[in-house]
Length: 156
Image 1 (tube, rainbow, N blue to C red):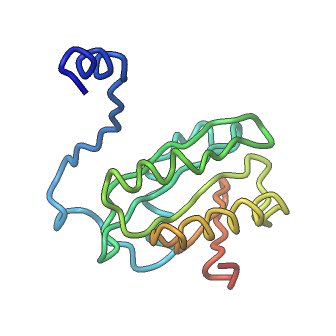
Image 2: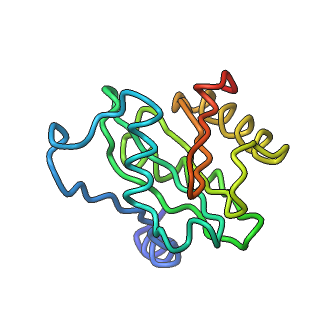
């Protein structure tokens, strides 16, 4: 390829970036040792005024010793659902060099029981994580009054 053609091709290709800027030392980040610890961190990063009103989906990114690298706000929907984009989740996880994930979404209606759709989305994300060597270690459903852990209930 001659130089002129190379310059034309490079100028026609967009640069794609996804940024991850750690804001503290890894040793200072909280370590997840239970579903309760994950629930507390998710709640601290959730807009409490939306918890009982708008369904949202978030993902916690963890390193090899389960320290929290960050939380992705995946989507915000309506009162009865939201969209989960697997490509966005795993692209961010790989960019952050995460080694595992914890999923979370809220049920504005207050029920802690997973819906059929919740189970299917969880299964799909677990399979994708297994293929990418990024295991999903839990999925929590959060309500104003409590939480449900798929891992604690044997659902993973």
